[in-house]
Amino acid sequence: MERKIVFLDIDGVLQPLDSQNRFEYCHGEIEKSPMLAIYKSLEKKFGIDYSVYKQWDVAAVLFDWDKVAVSLLKLILNLTGSKIVVSSDWRLGGIKLMKDFFTLHDLDKYFIDVTRAGESFFAEKVGLPKIDSKFSAELKARHKREHGEKAYLHWRTIEIFDWLNRNPDVKKWVAIDDMDLEGIGPNFVRTRDSLNEIDAEKCIRILSSRFKQKGK
Image (cartoon, rainbow, N blue to C red; front, side, top):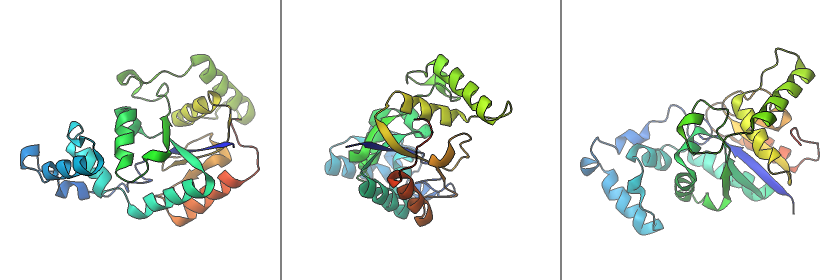
């Protein structure tokens, strides 16, 4: 059975950029915050100590991730048999953090990996393996040959293609992001605030289609 992958951004996809609900639950010191009771409730329910994470981050996952967007993502994953590889900067908190956060929305069973951070601004600040510089240079050179010397590859596009290069068994994939990922091609679905039904339909069509996908 072929593997299918959803490269997932979070801000502007699952979490609308203007959503600020988390601040209703976070009040400075954790001892004075409603999050203290929420931490205890979550540990009882999931067996995970969420107090090791910043209260604003946990509250964002609980109260700012859009319920419709999360449901649509599950629909995409279930209908196409796809798994999640996180391309969002949220991954810089580590794989355990991502898995624990996804658990809050029953998405952990779909999560398998994160992209490397070798091309991003945060590359020097995290422990993720770096992208092979030879691969990155060859990818950029090929893109310029095909699209002209001024053609640009977004750093997140390179990180996604790096993951695909290291996982050649993946035949179908889609990248969901609110940024314009230059160079990603027909595998890209750009959201405007959060994942909606039209976006979900595009993702399902891409993951179910027979066209040769870029990067393969």
